[in-house]
Length: 185
Image 1 (spheres, rainbow, N blue to C red):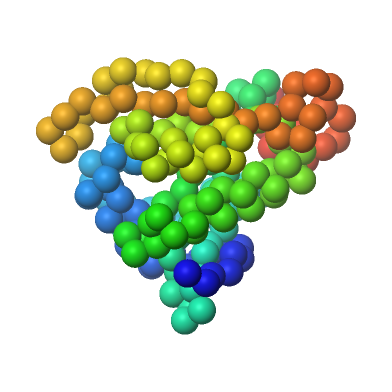
Image 2: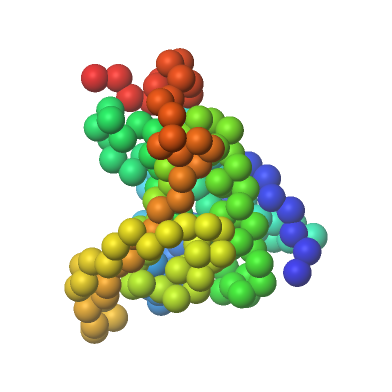
């Protein structure tokens, strides 16, 4: 499958909303039960990109959006400012074709370039494909939380995986790097 990666834009929101809707209704990656509409998805997009986090789209050669990925704050307390959480969602026809791996790889590069030091994946439903793509990217198992959600008539576990970015925790962050501007308390 041939595709390119580019920054997602507000004009992508209708397709992004559809991809996320399918995931909410049929999958376990999101613990939301009711899919949000376009206005809510546009608001979420604006909050994430407005804070300077990367939001990436994968587009096939026909211009069809296959999936998207973004980084966002893991937590909003200031001490967490060098850690991001990744999110990846794919259209059903894009799954198992390297799109998720490419999106994650690009997200890792962009977050490293922005000065973040840790990336965490919070994998709902302990989804095997998501675990595999994160493991292939170098993420390590950080923990298992049993029975964190109840969806589709069953209890779901959540797996936490973590990847050090750049120098990770081997050095102090330099003052003035990008994440310092995200949170002020």
